[in-house]
Length: 157
Figure 1 (tube, one colour):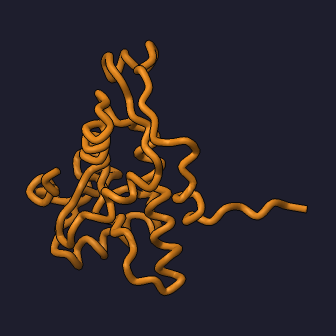
Figure 2: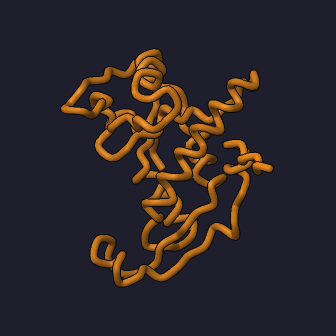
């Protein structure tokens, strides 16, 4: 008998003993320096994403900074923050399909440099439409799609 896989919303709600702050390991310190890293709970990443108002934007790095401050850590974990943003995006899309209206506006969360996250629901095209509807201009640079002047629209955290 196959085990039913968890819904995105269940994945988002599963905190797995998180958040926790740990010492940055030797391997990690080559890239991130010394100090501590916060591994946030998925809901914490979703909460920040949920609070980005219409026509404003945030990047994963801004989310990481905010979480590091909140937990008194040197940095926010780059890997889990990215994964949890991805889970939040899919959970939001799942909620939209169920007819829920107040979903996390995941399309406003960009990668470093204002790049649209192609792994979010609907890929680049779906997010491009949502961002353009909010007044943003999107350009293609190589394989990446970037929000023009995204820095002007970043939420102050």
